Amino acid sequence: MFEWGLNQIVALAGFLLLAAALGLNAMKKMKRYSVEYNGLNLVGSVLLLYYAFVLGDVVFQLVFGVWTIVGFGFLLKRLVDKDMTHEISDLDVDSRNWKFK
Image 1 (cartoon, one colour):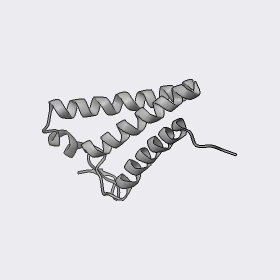
Image 2 (tube, helix red, strand yellow):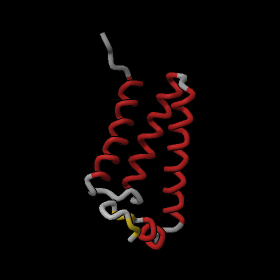
Image 3 (tube, helix red, strand yellow):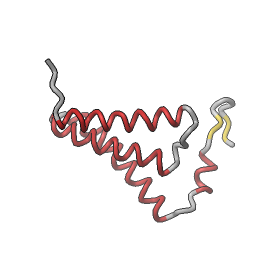
Image 4 (cartoon, one colour):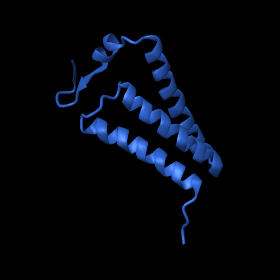
């Protein structure tokens, strides 16, 4: 029988954070360039990166390592340049028409 340990709880929490970010973005409740979205991704990826090291899985270490670096880089840039609206509006895509706004 499977027993839940601390490592599995950490991994589940990381997965739920990533799934929440993805789901909220898909439902248009959270923009993908927001601090909240990228914060959820960063924390979730850090938790899953920890779990990848526990497992010793090099592929997942690379995946979640890159995911962590990208999320951290975005949040760091956001702290330095608090007014990123000029960049965000240029990258916002209307998926119904596949045209840049």
